[in-house]
Length: 276
Image 1: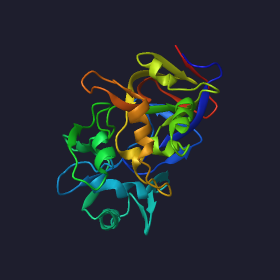
Image 2: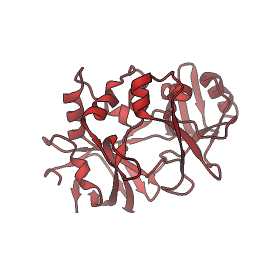
Image 3: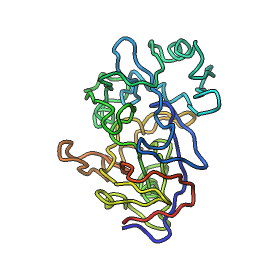
């Protein structure tokens, strides 16, 4: 279940897929997730595939960039970079930083694909090795979007506390796990959201259905802006919380949950959260 007094702690949006995002004071939860979330993506012009830090050997530098929505569109900032999605030279600037030719788009290809490195291979061999890749198709969660699997990703403070307790350095930064909604579960510990799969979650006036635990990829291990690399951000889960989110996947290191939206509404930090 969920502890009495559970509430929204923080809200987060990632306007460009695999870039760092922004914290929000309020968010419109729509059928396609938080408004503006994963609205844009970078496409590798050589392969036609969506650029994703899930393939860290090629795309770890995406996480040196931050995307935030402002009146001019999406502003992308990072080392030597300050461009808007509406700037004609944005793609050229980003290509120079990333070392690959990319285009910035809000329209997914007819068959949007991305490559995902095996997380266990990342822990074993590192991010610079040539690793086994799985190719995933995007858009099933909400047509015309860049979501991998579902439009909303949630994480509890209880899970962050548990990762912190298990981490050799006693560290768990929520930025590594890229949630949309962080739920404060008061003094509860462990991974309580695992028990919410298949149930309705009411957040303020919004209603969501939790569909699956979130399998973690290589992204938590990577440097995120000023956060250094941290393989233990994934290794803790691989050792202590390996569960089966879907029968086809087998046991995976998991943290958090994916959900679909049943009833759209505007939500804010402090809104109460309950499991129906």
